[in-house]
Length: 276
Image (cartoon, rainbow, N blue to C red; front, side, top):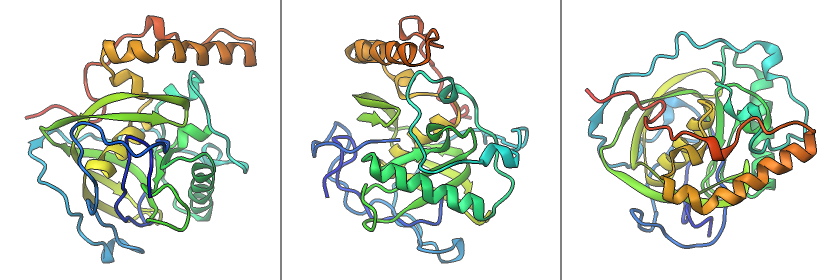
């Protein structure tokens, strides 16, 4: 099926693992051809997982330790349905997320609720901060349709390696409704994570799945997609970002917690580490 002009023909994936992109037209962006069968996941457990069909990841980096991350409490994962999308510039989107330590029915229910709101808002990925919960959880389905493609759930993910090759892609985000612009990211990543049951695994992602993962991983680190845009690209959406800031002020009766006019570009890739 057709998805947003950044995420296009999606490969099949599956819900056993666990970032927001939205779906639009069927244009392709520079650096990405037609995506057919980029990566495969198993349908149930790490033991049955099919290895992804990805290109080699060349650039090694320091492993990003999450041992010092604060552990989420039960209250950090309390939620009510239906979940609602948090929009920029809500400060929740800038807070670093806590590591999940309990893998129970409540966590599974949260992942299900995130998929529900993701589909209802025409998304193909969603991170927990985008529904008001600062915990390290993301869900995505590149097909963007319930019952189609396969669903991925990633818990406590971290980036282990990333590719030398950087590619631009026209990204959108459910926390920035109607805003799309080019973002440059590594084409491939290798990640460590846990599945919804708490089982540890490592996996390599390329092209569309890697793009979605990196976008959503940024959300877990309090990084937003416009932080990674060049100044020239940012200028094309500056007025739209300022409109969201004004909307926040009018809705809450408070000054916007941040202003794009004063933003400083983040030069380093959060979570990628340094090359050796």
